[in-house]
Image (cartoon, rainbow, N blue to C red; front, top):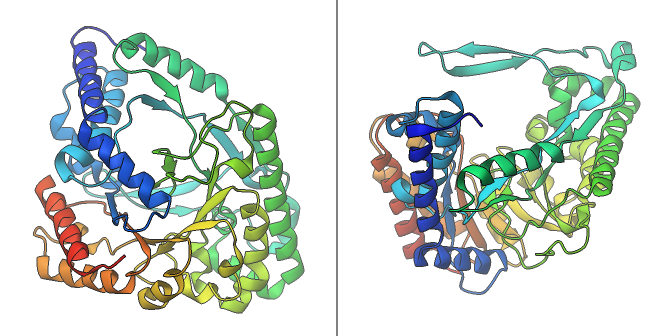
Length: 417
């Protein structure tokens, strides 16, 4: 890394701050609370996290000091790791190491995804549109080849060595695990429009099944390759679990003294695209392939913005290793609260982003009302709040801090374990 002089001093000071926070009694207690939550211990409290990444541009630039490009990238990462705790006061965990993940790549059907992007007046991303490569599934089926995938452990080791050279006397750089991520319908709509995907289910059901089989077979081959490459690491603590959560659990191996397999780690799946189809079509065209993949995981988390209640009875309820289920703004909160109250599945609430993302001031009464409903619906469940999809906060970090306070106050006064 090309980092030296004043930039290096700034970064080393930030790493020292991370170490102090990570080893503080407060953070040690927070890890214990997460472990109790992830182990489904009676009486453990609801956990609350705010996903910073989507609105980091409203927070981090004002703190930046480094000048060099590589130094600034690393400074952004280090500051972003501490902001949630220092400014928002949520339940985000600061690790006592510098995490490095092993890069992987997966190109479905060997068709690189391309997209057109729109920018707002400030030059920031406003939206995007994926370029369709498959239109009529029957006519274009020949374009679907074998998926191309790889893993890059050497890149992780190189990054670990570089960070160790700069900061190893303060905090170790550690290669860590994270949840596996496989979302078949998402990969499909990256190469064909959602409308064409829906029509393909109706017009060419046999070909659609064949396409889903090809894709999920390639996922399985990819997992087999990762096992052969011995790149799996424990996912039982503050490792990242997709969609705003952590991997804390007592059901998976916490040490990697022997090679780990896919059944030793967390996975993640969603099918937001299925919001446009019936439960019967989901059962026929989607769930069999999700089940084939998810059975390989040790545990898994399911769902993003889609409503999961229409697909619960005949499909998702069959998953024995499902441990976290997304309850989005489009979900029937009360129904899923009744269902999950006697199950070992976390009620992973994804609140509406509008409270933080719309308007300059926080509408406190509306926030209380929103989370009062959640508190009542999720009483008796293991409850976790993961606020995501906020792209601008239109104010200062105090708005986010107050939002976290209101969530906690409402849950403390109304949620029952």
